[in-house]
Length: 365
Image (cartoon, rainbow, N blue to C red; front, side):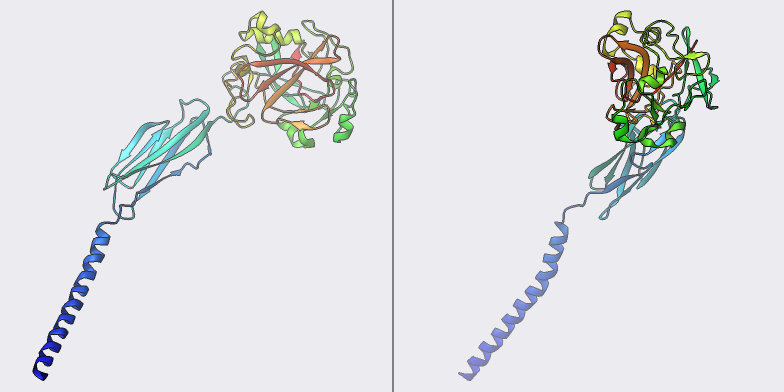
């Protein structure tokens, strides 16, 4: 029996050893199988430059750089797109495309990059940038100049038979030297009567004097005179000697020269087609995106100075350019004005409370 027991023990030990060996051999196979079945990781791609949301001055050459990476393989192709059109491609992990903006319109543009790896997995990245203009007067037109009593100088532009200021007024005195009252306090402005003369800077910040000009009540713009709707108005108001505040009728002359019909000009609210775009300064240095239709082809160079409401609050810098006329709306105690808007190409005509603060442009006598 001891012989048989020994043989049995020996066989059991040999069996245990075979099981251990099978397990040892099995573990590498399982690990290998797990690695071989692991899914391919997608590559990554990024538009490195320019930065998303950045502004690029029209006419510049811009280096558009894309970078791609694949942690478990290799990049076989990288491409760059402008507005959905492929402009460059390479069998590499990085790519640079020199983009000329010389012939582009002032607008937002989509820049994209795609990358593909050795397993044909493909990814994309997208950014947007603004092709902008420095704004200012239209460099293709000839401007004159005029100075006010405070020594401020303004560009002037001939549009049809009229010559307009091409910048917002910022004078603090009438032509006879008498001061225009500055009202900064919100409650004090809100208590102004319809015949009160006052001006302020947007948000009470005098730094706006060099960009958007002053905001005047209607009485301040008129220097206390009664309303009129003739061509010319004959109201010097706050304007320099030899210049006057335009009437509603004079604004219609300007609008019709730019393409409005008489019927359109006589309408209320948004009228015409692209006349507002012809008047607005180009680009986004002062106007908010999209500054719809802006071309400044007229040379008027309208800028969005916002306005001060009749309760004394400030509104819509960058969105609205709003200008007084000399004309009252019969029976309402209100006065006509014009507005240009950041997302409209047309021109708004309406009347409103006289103790609001609007911008002023003057017309040569």
